Length: 365
Ligand code: 6MZ
Image (cartoon, rainbow, N blue to C red; front, side, top):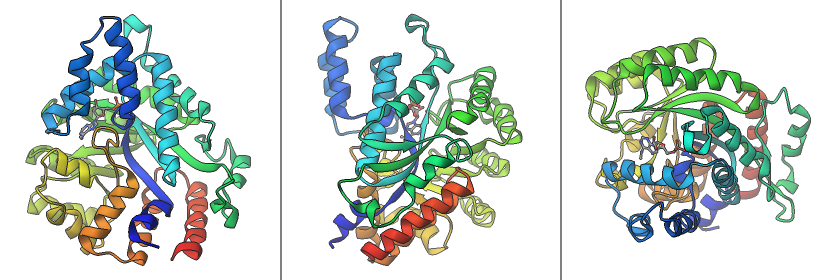
């Protein structure tokens, strides 16, 4: 089997995917057309932006504001969630941590809570694959459906995917708004919400604003992942590492002292190769800090960030790593399997994932 095909066929775990960045272009264009006809947006301008390939970091955040205009009503949030889960499952992602920023929108009678409920409706609405998003204790019976045997790879069977939700705090938010998101996550713990993410434009906002809510989240047993070092900001990177989150994303602009601290801490890093290249955080895949972390056996997981925005897939990210760093089949398999250790779900899910990987090893490696 060729490497590209192997990367697609192997089971994969996605830990860093933003809902609105993962929407299909075709869906965005369809929705934008309707809004254009209603006079709510200028369709040709939005179409141009969606189809354009250039994506500086600044442009990404301008685009997200446009995406949010297009997607922020309950029915659409449900639809995009359903499609995003289906797309990940179609490329053999067996565990997905999907993150999204709860939004309120008075005009749509949307509260942060009703937004998250619309996301959960999307998980329930998925039909083409079997979705397990509740904690194992709640849906233990369903877990047997995941037990891998050769049937797992029988194309006539419905595919299966674990999904867990992370609620994102946007760096534009106040301490009170961040706290509201954490409280919502706590209230929805038995509905598949498992943790908190800090994201948004890294040029905006102060660490101290979010710290009380993040500390509270941690204290209450929510898992926390932070966008860390997506831009140069030594003080913030230092404080983030001191906070000791369960994972960090990106880590593009760490200084030597941060690398040392990170490596001692063993905090897993969510690596987003294509995103970092397209937003000009790096100039080539070869020089990506993934190489150094991999060599140092530091915990890493390949992730997509925004499959829609950056026109990638998780299979493609594995293929990029394999072709850039000349990995063999075993190395690619192991890279993907190692991620089991860093998922936020409980041990029962981890055990099931290990069995899925055992079955894949027998079949592909
Ligand atoms: C930081 C990012 C991001 O939450 O509306 N987001 N934050 N860096 C990135 N690198 C490119 N990509 C996405 O999904 C979109 C939101 O996710 C965050 C931004 O806050 C963006 O508005 P949701 O589903």
